[in-house]
Image (tube, rainbow, N blue to C red):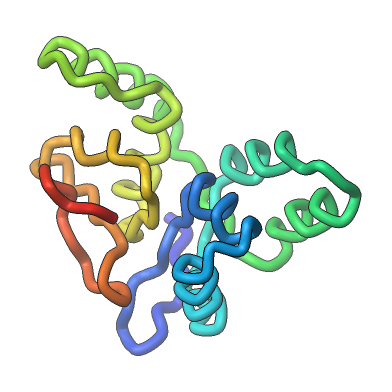
Length: 152
């Protein structure tokens, strides 16, 4: 596993693509939270999230910023077979009439595998059973289990 050194014993935070898009869209609340996380050295990322951001880049400046993520943040490494685990999780939830995309299942499992908090505003992550161990970033960085009714 590739862990970041936690500052003040607070765990690293994986920031999901929609949060980054809100950050660069200058959402004041998210902008403040993400800046605080970056200042504390707590941000980590995934190649998938960086690729999604690159695909949304509308100018060369944003393209450069997103490419620099690989130099600025720790990139969590994929555990072998994680995409297959993600597919199984997605199927497991579908059998319970809960939809979770393969992409979201993968992001969740990466966060679980690396024991980091997931900062997202995507409510689909609330469908993941508490027993899986997904922890969402909320209220300044305390660990919170994903559960119905939480708003990340």
